[in-house]
Every structure is written in structure tokens, then in C-alpha cells.
Image (cartoon, rainbow, N blue to C red; front, side):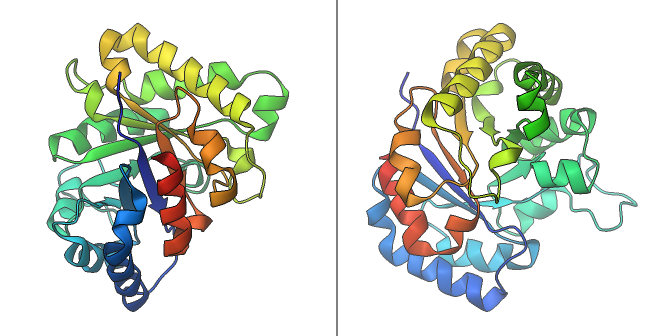
Length: 251
């Protein structure tokens, strides 16, 4: 099964609107460097419209960093999926480890968010991954089982191929540590096998991304693994040349 690589840059809480615009304009000019890979940017909410406008027609995705399952309502500080679309977004990150830790985001909440994103026409990227303690105690696979199976429990058959899953071992996020290609592939292969249990052949259409201190120096080896279809890039995505180099490695 041929799956187009996806390189998504998560800016987290970085970049002003002016900085985001300058980055997007530079990315558009140099996009050919990315080769065959699909590129997406996940800017802060305040820059979604700026980035989307600068990249309109380029094929680069613009993803929100979170979205609420409700269409509207009394949810102060939240943002609806339709609001993301209105700002120009084409996808959304869901269940990033920082939101799970800092905002108590649960698998049950994600089970509602993923279909809400699909209903709005967004590409949902469900983030999963284990802590250092969970890896050290041998529970990685059970953690991934729970996060994947519960997080995708609201997805209808026929829609699984529209969902992206990002494996981000928490112990490798912002630490400078990265899973070896073998460790990353083992986790991705396990996730793919579990997906086949719930959605059969649709699992082979789903893109699985690796996230965790991905940088130009280690991207090619990680992205060469058979079940790794791209990367969710954090710090290295704040520099356009770095993000493009990772995308070129994916090609």
C-alpha cells in the first residue's frame, strides 16, 4: 500500500503573527525542496488565518493544535472544529501528550473529538504514546492499545482511512532523546496490527507518524521504516530549512 508521507510541524506556543507569515511565505517559495511529501503546519490559533492565507493553493496543510467535540456552547477557552475550518484549517491535532498531561485530556474525550473533526471535514491526527515509566515497566503496548482503541472508538467504518495516528513517546519529546528506528518501528507495527483488528484493510490506508525529537540528522533513518509514514515535528519545525530537510528525507 502506497501512503504519501506527511510531515507536520507543531509550533506549539511559538511565533507571532508576523513571524508566522514570514515563515509561511518562505515555505511557499522553497516548497519544491520537500519533494513528494505532504507538509502541514500547526500554528497557534492566533496565526491560523495568516498561515492559511499565505499558503492558500500551495497544498500545504494548516492544522489546529486542538479542537472541541461540541459544535458550539458554553466552553470558555475552547475552539470548535467549525471555527478551525472558518480560520482556514484543514486538519487538527488531537490528544497531544502535553494536552493529556496539562489539560487532563482523556481517551473518552478524544473518542468524541475524532469523529467531530471528521464531520467538520478536518483531518484528525490522534496522538498516542507512552511515558518513560510505562516503557520501563513494560506496559507500552497496553498503553497504546488503550489510546488507539478508545480514541478511535467513535470512528465509523469507511472513515478510518481519513484519520492519521501520531506515535510520540513522551520520553522523547523535547528531551533531545529519540527512539531508535527499531523502537519506533516496533511501536508503529504494533499500532498498525491493532488497527487491522478494528478496521481491517482500512488500516493499510492510514498514515502513522513518528514524533519525538525528529530532526534532519535522524529523519531519513526513522522515515525509512515500513510502518512510519511521516513525522510530527516539534522544535525542528520552527525553522523552515529544518522542516523542509525533514520533508525531503521523507521523500
